[in-house]
Length: 141
Image 1 (tube, helix red, strand yellow):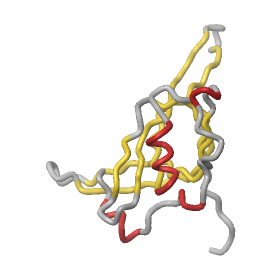
Image 2 (cartoon, one colour):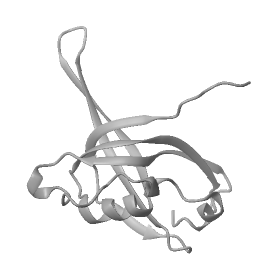
Image 3 (cartoon, one colour):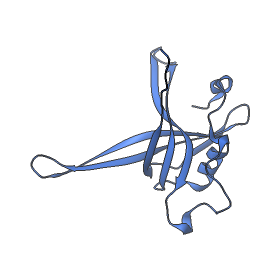
């Protein structure tokens, strides 16, 4: 089946924890962190309701290093990326496990200027794309 498709995610939320910055065996930086988004509405009775959704984020290369250096728990961020599902076999149970993550391609820090990244650092970069498939086996998670 020919045709276009689109895999794009856009989020604005707050970090649930400090980013975990590590490096693959090939020396490529990877940062992992979670972002919370909140949804608020009134139910049929007029009572205020709220739901928090947690999103697992993975950033690569220079973008990962920027995340590790400048983002902290509670930081407000705008993230663009794509959904990616990966699987692995649980070593303890032998059961195949799955997780869906957002592979970040762009990031804007939305906190106040005093806490923001210096003006000469560009968070979005073509270097932010994911690691080549051959190196995914070297991931520390």
